[in-house]
Image 1 (spheres, rainbow, N blue to C red):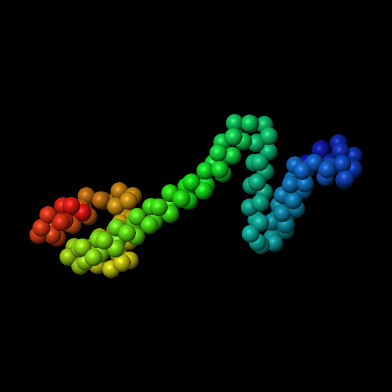
Image 2: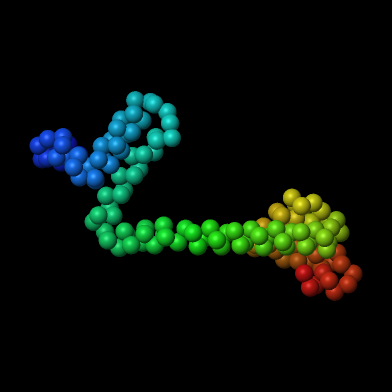
Length: 143
């Protein structure tokens, strides 16, 4: 930073480049953090990693692809959330309080946690066997 500032000769020439302006902002927030000023910007100095993007074009392409995929990921999360809500309502209506234990559909909140447990695959077989055993018909095996 200091070497680039001295090489530029004047403040106007130094700040004419956008990279240097961002560096000045990061430096000001870093000094404010060292002085003990609390705030949201305390981790702003971690953004100095942006300099790597200039030297590694592959990293730039990877970061661009990750940022451009955010809307698709949000659409997927919305779809999974709607599906989980629909499955919770269906299981609550179908099974109700017939399943014993914490993993049940006794209330909407518990049912939503049970569906989340099934989605992440955490002890899903326990939920499966308790659901099958709770029904006297083949409906438990269908769900």
